[in-house]
Image 1 (tube, protein in one colour):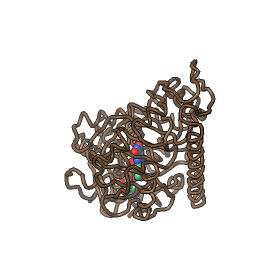
Image 2 (tube, helix red, strand yellow):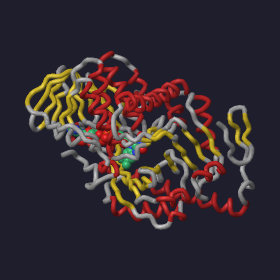
Image 3 (cartoon, protein in one colour):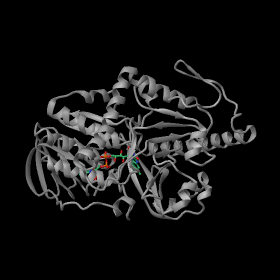
Image 4 (cartoon, helix red, strand yellow):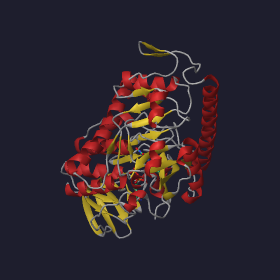
Length: 464
Ligand SMILES: Cc1cc2nc3c(=O)[nH]c(=O)nc-3n(C[C@H](O)[C@H](O)[C@H](O)COP(=O)(O)OP(=O)(O)OC[C@H]3O[C@@H](n4cnc5c(N)ncnc54)[C@H](O)[C@@H]3O)c2cc1C
């Protein structure tokens, strides 16, 4: 139906606990609306809800089902920021504009929390508890710089955690210091998307599923959008189809690299889990692809990692994911999984989202990569204001242009980069553990770090 098969068949942890939803059918006949949104993932649904709340008529056309793509299959971490590191954002746009972008990313996070609370949507299983980004190496300079930049320059809430505090809650000698983001939280993303669809409809939006858009005539003032069983005319079109838009808009599709991530949930681990993890927030132990995890259902691990730029059968990755768990937490012993699945994100080259007007009254909300829960909400609000109020906040994303992602060679290069990065990361982690074994804890050789006016001596200390 769409150009990429984003999803492996089979149940996910989320689909097993999916809330009941109203029957929705395909578009039939002719419609005339103010805004047509293509794609009922989190980006498209948020735009639709916000446009409808402002009194405009809006239709969402979805090729498959609501949150069929990454939106219903992700790990459910709602974080501030972007897939692109804020240091790179500052280098691209300067400190003042980076500060404004950081605030928008936090507004996206607030949007998700507020929407869940205000609508009382069921089954979202919101868990507060923050996000711990753990280092597998004892080199703290980059993380100190991140804490300083976000905490002191950008106005975010962030803390540095020393190794003792990390290992108190994550009982692994693979882990050293960490950066803690207290405002982050976790959700059941599929039920959030379904709740968002209900909220959009309650505001007046109409949503049609099994309605793949086959063509758009963007040249005329009123745009024709055609599906196999219907068509509509709209003043504005919003492209929110992520990496699945394919031949509908090849020029845009070519700006994204598809990246699959593999996720599994374990059997109930009972008391075993407390021997390894007592932290109830979300955890990532890499800057890049491995490992991201959290506790779901009371005593199960949801564990994600092992990215690929070509789709693989997730069952073939099960052994590797289990080995990743065993490496970090050998005390858990053999761990069986009950669900394993994959999902695909669209990564732009600069890893910032693509938000803005690509031709007159044709809008793009895409490229959220693996950091889409806050940024899709942010984009939905920004584009709704652009369309209905001519607000120009979207122009803050203009410096992050639409860049060709390199086609097949770009995908291959991204895969090689991932393998290379993972290898380097493992080497640095091994070295750090060797140093610790040799010099002992508390005696690790390291330099003093300067954090603002403070000098942080020796090893990493709490610097919140
Ligand atoms: C495994 C995994 C884990 C992740 N974990 C996290 C996380 O913990 N935190 C976080 O912030 N982000 C995470 N992400 C990223 C996040 O899930 C995505 O960035 C976000 O869901 C993208 O939403 P979207 O609406 O842009 O796209 P999608 O959810 O892909 O939705 C696009 C929709 O458009 C539809 N569509 C496409 N073409 C057409 C067409 N021609 N006609 C009609 N409909 C069309 C598709 O069918 C699809 O339903 C993760 C992603 C993956 C894959």
